[in-house]
Length: 235
Ligand code: IPE
Ligand code: IPE
Ligand code: MG
Image (cartoon, rainbow, N blue to C red; front, top):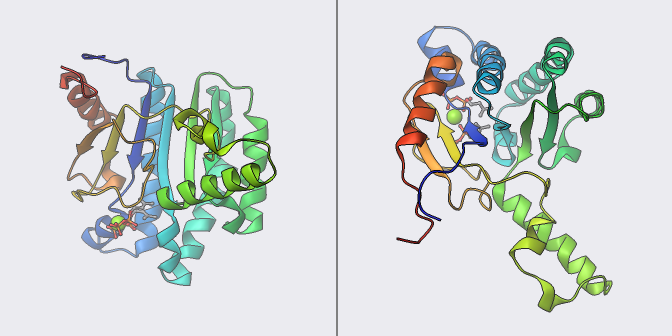
């Protein structure tokens, strides 16, 4: 198993919008707006590099603790993203996908997202997965509950639970594990992102704030990945 593996899936913790806003002397929401632009740039850059899956942490289960003003601004930016950028994303052949406790997302936003998911479901150039109201622990708990229900209903046997069965109960069982995780803004933690899926991912941290992220910065992360030797516990 040692050696290189084709870079197929990149996960990103898009962090630093608030600090960018502070640096630019503007309101936090402007930082998020600039962050949405960085996302659009990065999706295009990733597709140009032949990356098949891009999964981005857009809103965590913990982010509900932020002020109603900020939460509302983020939800409205999400709606704008779907409204304004969907056509272009669809044109590029990108499929939109969502993971998380999406039942917690306000219904107008949720309905727009569901429409985007339906409209792009046959696209094959690449998949953009938005992690929304997402928490790694929440995902493990939600999967465990469904497994327990299926055991109780005698649909599966407890003795049949293994890693591949567990995978089938995640928000998106088809989502492959990311080979590379990127976190911007200099924080060195996972903040509850993709706990199950990151078990063997390479981690790349950069001080660049998310709204400043672009094709060039993505290139640096990919270069970092290409320099790593992946051993998976072997020699
Ligand atoms: C990331 O930027 C965006 C979300 C968490 C939604 P932050 O808003 O966390 O920015 P900082 O960490 O305060 O700079
Ligand atoms: C992680 O960033 C969540 C997202 C990028 C959506 P946070 O800014 O919320 O994480 P902490 O608070 O620094 O751990
Ligand atoms: Mg942050």
